[in-house]
Length: 239
Image 1 (tube, rainbow, N blue to C red):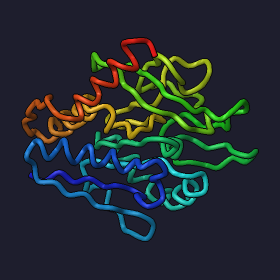
Image 2: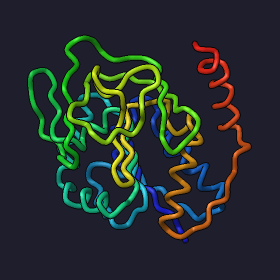
Image 3: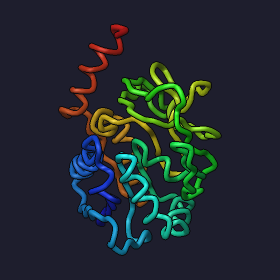
């Protein structure tokens, strides 16, 4: 059986090398000895959302984000349908703003996909930049990542991660990101899946489960060793 991944707007939403998240997924799936296909899709390509098992969108500049927003709107019905059916979506950085009701920047409001009820507002204080530590309720080890964003999220009620240290969706929230069905949206960069192989494993395990494919637990990898070293040096010692 072949696993199909769609890397959406790969050329426009790759500000911080976030294609590394797709590399992490490919590496994890290759370790499962599965047939795999990754399609790089962007403006001008015809996208059949029923064809793929997992979709990925990364972070982009403000200009590129709105270019993508103008294009992706034509797929709103299809995207909502496949998310409701439980297909896997991973959205990192500011691309998660596309799935909310609107994005408000520079005193202008841009209507987004309205798949979820949250919305993005320009932070009136300062740009949010820095390392964050999070908790994911399905995993015992913390999630690590970096944030560099201009907006805060309001009206989010289905947080992906619980804040340990760093930055939540907004200044009054205790959570970051959005998790609904198999949609995983987070501002965390790094890339997120490269830096958190245990979280990548969780997604791959559940992706295979949805397709009735046996998952082989593989833990002794350089990704896991790098993660453990970081946790030892920068989390466990309180840095």
